[in-house]
View 1: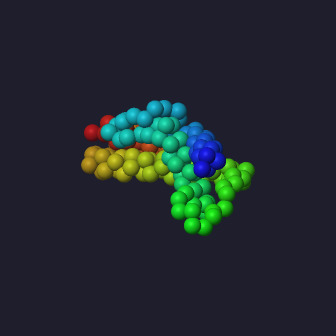
View 2: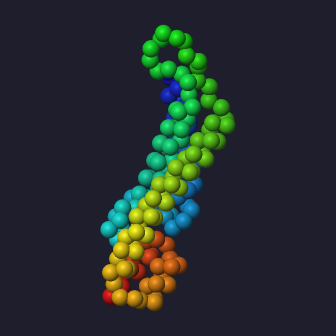
View 3: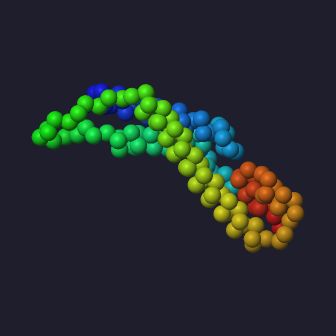
Length: 143
């Protein structure tokens, strides 16, 4: 059982590392969780946490050992380097999905706000070329 916990921590750390790498892709940057323009932004803590949980869940799903019920001896858990590298990739992918969902929420709110206001070519340029949060700020400033 002790080895399982140590292995799970190692997988979680690798998943968190994959999530942390994802922090620097896109507009998020290294910031704490915040509510900006009325939208929750998870920051690096949320992204790393999602990467950690995704990697741990994926790794546990591949294990065949039983935690209880000693009717049949279960095989011992062996952590392989390939599983650690997979944990990094799964952590990265899970964090990317999480960030994508947050950005989708921002873009939907941007579209709803902009649709209710008069046309503004400057705001349209910012919405088209800016980060999701810049687009929402531009939509909120429209007349």
